Length: 116
Image 1: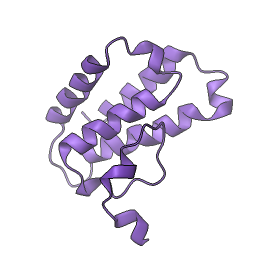
Image 2 (image 1 turned 90 degrees about the horizontal axis):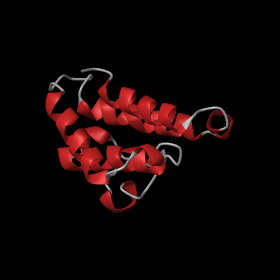
Image 3 (image 1 turned 120 degrees about the vertical axis):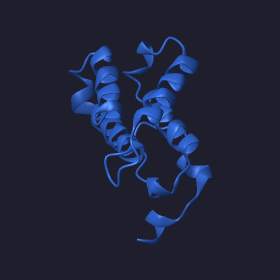
Image 4 (image 1 turned 135 degrees about the vertical axis):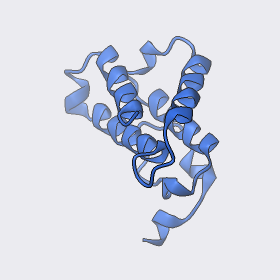
């Protein structure tokens, strides 16, 4: 359990689809959360072809973060957690075989904005 609460920025921000070693997201700064979400998008091989401009994607994630309310649960931290789980799901081999690239990307966007 201690590994889940330890705040270690260096390994948590590695390129990823799904990162099982993320510390508790609630202890992260908004800029860390934006970067974690961005790397979740970029870590999903099937979603990358839909990202024509990585800077535009990062700006979109920042804008989404501004619209989440500071609720105890349904907040930007939860959105990033949900996006991370979706990245894992769409990266599963049996899902990758049947899921078109654009659908993987849309599912990640839906996970990010699902409580707005």
